[in-house]
Length: 295
Ligand code: GUN
Image (cartoon, rainbow, N blue to C red; front, side):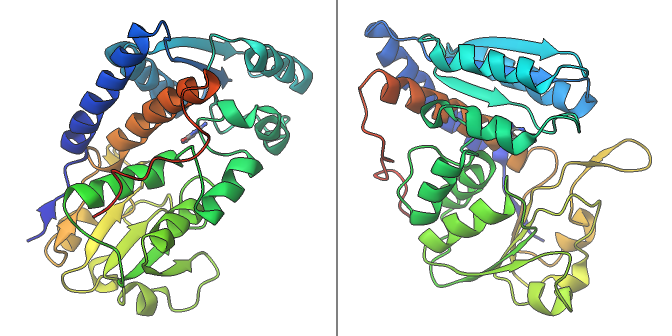
């Protein structure tokens, strides 16, 4: 039976460190500030945005929420971002995805000042992540690395299989694992004989967005299984991409849903907001402090 990887516990410990950093900055007259922009009324997004605000309040980070109607035009959204880009009190800008279909999401992402891009979605920050020289953490993958580190699960030399190639999770996850010296395979919807590859995984990351997609026969005995899924089943219950009850019998470690990866994502966003405040006030160079990132 697998050990549960407790994202809530790792998140609480990480937030203690962030709280201390916020207090130190407050002593210097700097209050980190995060602007969150939500367009439309996607129910899932509303929950995420509410949780982000709660995390900011808890840590002493200032936050602003802009809730715009579904019909908002692209020019109007860009005008708001332009204002936030210039506002010295705003250190981080997050535009909640998905955006309505009439808005070009890439254009919006590219318009955010890279120094304020706390999602690390801007091509400049993505490029730096690929090179391994980055200031802003890709939130979900960085949260997963923090969970692994906390349980002393070192990816070095291990075969890590990432299922999913999204810009938010799969791709940056593969890069962070590669930087940690893993051998990485990325699988996606065109992969042939997926099970034959996932069965080789010593660390398996499921970021597919399909309810109970990873079944026990696809998992190697003793694997570490990370479930990034946030799906609702037919009865409305939150469930991951992994068939948890069956897979936990085979895995050595597994993240539950909820209470695994989810809490870490917001914690990493808070960390990026503090980093942005330091960079924009000239207190930190635009590189990542890796001193706490070893196994
Ligand atoms: N939608 C789902 N996850 C995320 C995220 O991490 N950032 C943004 N901006 N939108 C999301």
